[in-house]
Amino acid sequence: MSPKIIAIESSCDDTAVAVINNGKILANVVSSQTIHKQYGGIVPELASRDHIQNILPVVEEAVERSGIALSELDAVAFTRGPGLIGSLLVGAAFAKSLSLALNIPLIEVNHMVAHVLAHFIDDPKPEFPFICLTVSGGHTQLILVRDHLDMEIVGQTRDDAAGEAFDKSAKLLGLEYPGGPLIDKYAAQGDPYSFEFPEPDIGGLDFSFSGLKTSILRTVQKMKKEDPDSIDNNLEDLSASIQHVIVTILLKKMTTAGKKFDVDQFAIAGGVSANSGLRSRFEALGKERGWKTFIPKFEYCTDNAAMIAITAHYKYKASQFASLDTKPSARLKFEA
Ligand code: KG4
Ligand code: ZN
View (cartoon, rainbow, N blue to C red):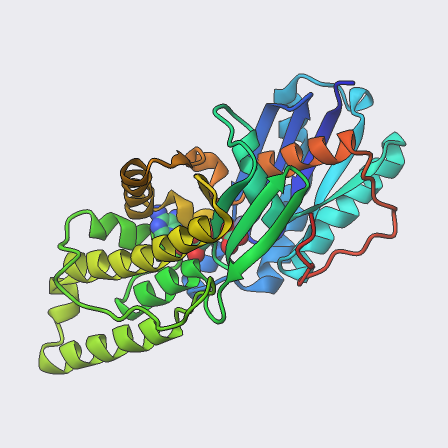
């Protein structure tokens, strides 16, 4: 059995399509929307409209690049959620139409499970069980992964996601949306110990970033009052200090989770796993503690359809198909 599957991802502001053959990615196309920049955040209505415009050309490009004919496909997969409902509906409706037209089964994929399974696209792959820290614009989760389709959230954020913490801090520094990559860029030139921001005081494996946001806001307001140019003049040091505290918070909880579940394999996933500070400190921590660490390729960190395709591959093998009336869900429950 070597399933050939087309996978569609449209949960947020990227229209993405991938084709996979027996677990090997043959095409992985992403069209990222740029229209939201001018609004300082994603405008859901505009995102849905853009998906409608992009979806057919992106599907056509992915199919062409894969070298596989539509008639050879064995299944069509789509992101069911979580995400923006208007965006999800576009991908779901397209996938269902394709499934009907080609008379092939439909597979629904949870976007957060797919971020974890992005680690099974290329070698080396983690062994079970492992802990995956999934950090994106909408989520911050510690996941205990027992098998491809058997995983559980053991810790998550109580307020902002790590990506939001980056983006909101960047906004306070006057940077464009999405500010995460910009903080990363400026941080490379700054001193991470020049400003001190507090770590939240919550036990267990949950995260909280709202106190940090308030503390950064206060610092920025105070600095601006003393000197209106002080933020620009300290952009590198501020970015480095903000990045440092966010990464410290993430890695401390990950370490606690590892101890609790007696795990020595760790992975990071999601858009924030593209952060160079997180990547390098995660690797260093792994070396220090003798962990096996797994970091996805950049293209598989942020939203993409290859991760939807690999998840669909495992679901196909487990005969987990969806009916045509499966509804997309903005707050889809984490289940795998
Ligand atoms: O997984 P993703 O592409 O989309 C969601 O599902 O949310 O994650 C997007 C998030 C944004 O908050 C963005 O600022 C953040 O990932 N991000 C980064 C970096 N690259 C993307 N944050 C910090 N450093 C980066 N290099
Ligand atoms: Zn994502």
